[in-house]
Length: 392
Image (tube, rainbow, N blue to C red):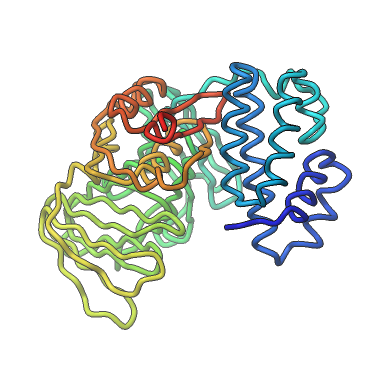
């Protein structure tokens, strides 16, 4: 998108003094996507650029110039701004900060932040509204106010003991709990029927403390792998994004993050997919049902199931996937944000297999070994660049 000089100057004024100007800016341009995109692009660039400058000032000057070229401004205006930026960068860090925006603590901005790796963690929300934080390797007994007893073990499995004081099965079926797994997390749960569920990062599972006699229904947002306990007369149903996946006893993966494609992958057994105004779809082992964002229909195909269930087995597995999609998945397990210096690099495709236990630097190294991209790690921000463009 091309931005004119006046719009850029408006955003720079906001970035100089965000405390004084940001609220007014957001109120004035709340319906102006172009201005909001420009603000976010400049903000993210400078957040990354400040850290780059601390390490290598000339390099920051080069990348800032590239960024301004991308904005397609008139040559004489571009020349003046680049010259000003060069003087500022050579002068000192503090002058650079003044040029872009004022921060209260520049040392804190530049402080290195390690990119954290994920582990087992979750939050249990009971039907009474109580919240319990579940930590990696923690063993504990939770006695909910409703009288239900729940335990966690050192294997990071949440399960219900069967003790519920005077509550009947019908009452327990109305007691819905929620297990929320945040970014950087994963967790397991053993449901009341013996079904085991592995829940991935940024996912939520809603389920009854005990299933009723008609069906076993759970609701999922995000990604989970199900090992369903076989009960031929008691179907198990996963509801996600308006789709009902019905099984009797099987293993399958459901990936349904907001604003992303929906994928349901069958490992063994059989499942039936039901959706409003659509025919029932039966999946065979090794098949995946894909639905694009805002799509109405599924595309069923034979796939390498490892691509879809690798996370469940403790590793990443990418087969010629777009870099942007790869980093989106990695973001859920590692604590970082991405800035792309060249938008075209998002569509580069890579193959990679790596353990989830690896530190993030090792993952980055594998991507860089392809010789196509370079990745700078500055705090918890990574800056991705096209190697061929750098050489040019």
